[in-house]
Image (cartoon, rainbow, N blue to C red; front, side, top):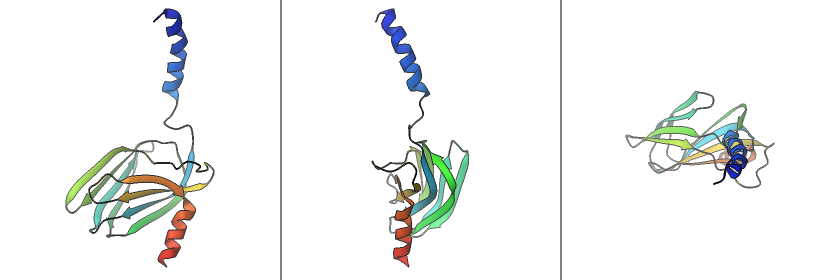
Length: 140
């Protein structure tokens, strides 16, 4: 590669390395965890590296969903770590990122939804906070 091409590519590589995980910022106002298995999930923990915070839930019954509201938090695709125990066995998923469905508005309040299926890899998706409210209303 000629020096001229290298000098042209150098600023481009620098800019790419400075960009965050996602160019979009989503406003998350709640989190829900669904235990989509036939036995309890215990010791669920979610660790948010960027904030150095851990949320712990002691038990989620089979088919149960725990949800929590909180002040607006910005999410830019930063990886999360979650840990849980299912049927006496400990699991950990590092560098889990939230899936963001296409067309999801950045300005809308969102829910971070985790679905645990026993010992398999969990899913993590951003959804409208309205979707969470509709599930809660349907349970009443």
